[in-house]
Amino acid sequence: MTIQVFGHSASPFCLVLFHVLKELGLSYETVQLSGFEELKTPEYLATKHPFGKIPYLDDDGFHIYETRAIARYLVNKYQGTKTSTVLIPSDVQKAALVDQFISVEASYFTQPLSRLIVQLVFKKRHGKEPDLKIVKETREELDKALDVYEKILEGKDYLTGEFSLADLLHIPYTFYAVNIAGEGDLWNKRPNVSRWWKNISERECWKNIVTKYKLE
Image (cartoon, rainbow, N blue to C red):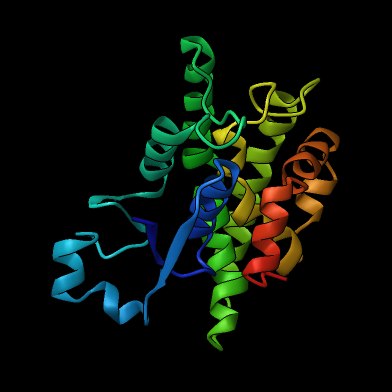
């Protein structure tokens, strides 16, 4: 049975899973939901995601929700079966560092960036004006986070030294910020961060995702 991802192709979190699946060489089917209203229906809450969010994954009857949990599951089950790409190393200490940076991504990077993208991208797509106070606050918060990333990435091409799931999780929201929202200067003015973004955004699997879902 084909792996099914329930969500929307514009969602950064769904794009994370599409990218993971591509890197692992897995085929999948996207089940596009009709709209936000569907996420709050009793059927969806009872059988897909109790908090009414996306994505949700069905792997031959195994059901799981929450992006990072799904990504870890896919890596743990399928890594090495179709491609040689390593997203989580087998070495315990190296894997711990990947987890460390996944926590950093969730806590200090994606929190402000996701709120910024809601204002600058998704609100505009729905014909609404961005809240400039939120834009200012989240931009400042992200600016501080990227100062730390600049130090972390000194002398490294990737967060742990080698490309991993931790790097991959940063890609969709950063893509929206740099390519759609016009916020590229936040990355470009920092040499280490800029080099890192170039490395991770030029992955062939990610470029295939950009083309397939017409993100630009």
